[in-house]
Length: 87
Image (cartoon, rainbow, N blue to C red):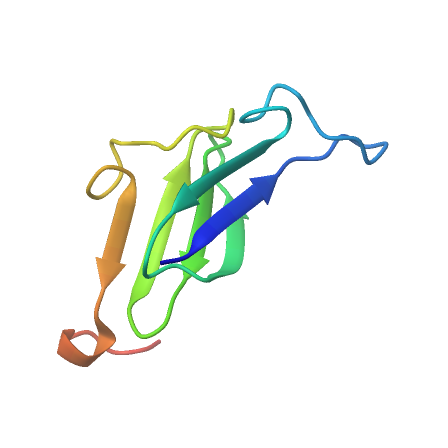
């Protein structure tokens, strides 16, 4: 089991207290090793990575998990059973 910790910093390098708990948020996900982060136009945050399964977690801009994404905020794909290709 892996615990991911994500922090949001202000321009001056201090933690942004409006994000998560005192500028940090954490969650446990057995399949996620964060390898990439993207911020959507609506300011929701996608954390992606994983081994052996590809996993993505979406957070609201305040650091809380967006439970409307995937299953309770997490989407997982097992590449070995996927019929899709790489582009």
